[in-house]
Image (cartoon, rainbow, N blue to C red; front, side, top):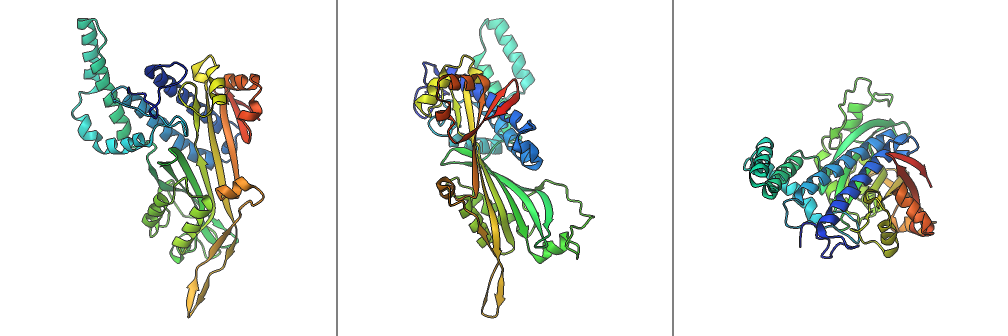
Amino acid sequence: MSASETDGEAPGNGLDAKAATERYFSGISSALDGLDAYLADEESPFYRHELTGSILSGYLDRLRHSYDAWENRVSFAERFRINRAESGYPAFHHVLDLDSDARNAEKDLAKIPDADQLRQEMIDFILLKKAYPAPIKRTMAKRLYLEHVQQGDVFSPFVLPETVRVSVNPKTNRPYYVVHWGAFDGSANIPLVYIAVIEDSSSQMVGKLLEPNGQLKPDLNIPFPIEGLLNPELAHQFDDFCEKNSSYGLTLATIADNMDKDFEFLHPKQLRRIVMGPFYGAGVTSHGRVVEDILASVSNPDNAWMLTWTQQELFSISEKAAKWGIWGSTPARQTYHIETDDLEAVRQGVSDYQKHALVPHEAYQAIYASGKRDQVFAGYKTHVVSGGQVLRDF
């Protein structure tokens, strides 16, 4: 099948492969623009929590760069598959392609004429042949694709942790780090962002970061963000842990417990995961007849989409003190709060969660006019965007 093959099924609503591909990339571009607007809106919790907003903006940029690369790839690749019925994102092997092609980009680019030469060849072809230079355009698309992945700022299967802040907990007199990392889960086929607050009780870091009175040393000059965990002795081990424990199939409680057990001197106090999807696009994705039919009725394809995300949070409510003795020792261990009154919170293994939906004004009007607003947005905080701004939340 052509470059817009979608999980082995032809695109819906009578769209041919090329039209479906163009609509998909147009829709996801509008959705990412809308999420950008939401992050910048003064009423957004991400705006009010500036650090969280800046972290998510970085991953949003990675998604955008990935789609820029994929959009060029469809112009020369034989196939491009979309996970229609679940996440709405490209199939996971395309995520792997970004990593693989980045490693070979320099060598492959050396075999392709530079952009100026290709543009001149296109002009010459048009003037001489009076025809469209499709082969040259495919070569140009491949060059642009390789240049994108060579930059290394795409959403790869695993995005290494970064430390973006250090502070001190006055109750424990320990320094704590705000660390984030990302993963594009291969099973759920969806991008994930993790943000953790982790205390460090190692004597090395306590002595390095804190004054005897428990305050941060005033002369610390740390150029944030720092690649990896701020504690250099644990940084590589922490990278490995995050890579092995970032699956969507793991609950936050499981990930936090694993971290608590694997690192004697690291104490995860808060863990947050943002599940960035699914994405719904008219004529391309297939998430249920109700949503499909309503989005198909939106006249402007750029507004015929909906982007959802889920924010999960787990926090420690107490710490079991470490015990040291001649017959053995037990490191400090966290006790996490699970909201047992909410069965969904129990299933997710979290203290709290919020489900959000971002939708263009025209699509929201179509959903509202259908009389199925409550059915479509049940359980979601709904954010409507228009003209590059968030109008209001529902």
